[in-house]
Amino acid sequence: MLSEFQETLLQSVKAYQSTQLVKNKYENVLQHLDSGIMLFDCDGVLTFINVQMAKLLEMPRQSLIGCNLLQLLRHPHLNQFKKRKILRIYRETIFHRKKYHWLITVTYGDQMDGDFLLSVKDVSDFKRIEQTAYQNDKLAMLGKISAAIAHEIRNPLTAIRGFIQLLRPHLMQLGKDEYARIILTEIDRANDIIHEFLNSSKPSAPQKSTVNVSSLLKEVVLLTESEALMKGCQMILHEPSEELLVSIDVKQIKQVLLNIIKNAMDAIAEVGGDHQGVIDIRAEKEGKSVCISIQDNGGGMDKGLLSRLFDPFFTTKEKGTGLGLSVSYRIIRNHRGNISVDSLKGAGTIFTISLPLVS
Image (tube, rainbow, N blue to C red; front, side, top):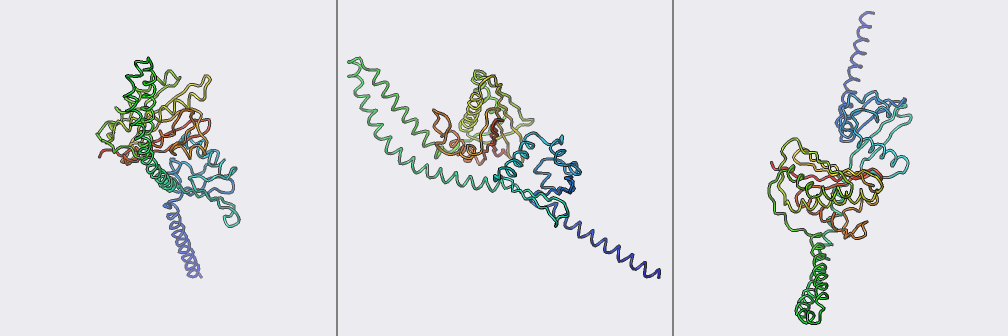
């Protein structure tokens, strides 16, 4: 009798160990999926979170177990940007059914025994590749159009300019030299527009030199802070804690930074009133790249505007050409870098530029 009991107990222990091995195996699989996984029980308490989900939230995994959604949003390690992003995703996916760069799946019902399984996959990289390909196609078409326009317009402009210079002495005798000056100025302006148009489709190859990112940003702030003060904006530069060297065409990268800062000033000016504008500039090392961010507290943009921001000729400004950001996009790509933007209507905009570090 005792022998049978021992045998039954041994079988139960083996069965339990086998169950634990299977459980540990599947838990290990879930831990290392490339999708983020969160499991809430029927009371809304988080009982499981995998490594990828913790990475997406940028929070320590163990500190989240046992939290409900409200406690998670109030968690001291969750930064304001992530909190706004989670709330925006919740609002747009649940209430407005909008697509987002996080692919979210919620599983619940009888098969889950009252639990809720939240699966999140970050598809930003795929979206970025898709947008880059789309942008490159548009710029390639723009290049073909610009080459034809340059040939068809520059030649007659050159001829007109030459004849005006020949006629200028006669106009001076008639006291009409001002007419010649205005014509020449307008021809030169037309040539400048053509030049800008050509650069938007194919900026010149970068003439690279190694520079310190901190020195570059200081110079850019020095060039813009007086205009910023006149427009009621405060420039705040957070210098990197270590020396970060990049190989860049200084003139071209300055053009990009100045263009973004100018846009930030305009966005703040549009808010008007007694609004205290702030432009926050920082540079941080991320792996083998330096990440430069320019954040403003202007009016922000909605998703429709955001998706067209780098399109050639797209502008919301009355006197804008719509070429500044498309030129900036191509310059950064020519430097083997990336440029992205995130914005929230009424809360401001942040541009992020990533450039490879000198190894």
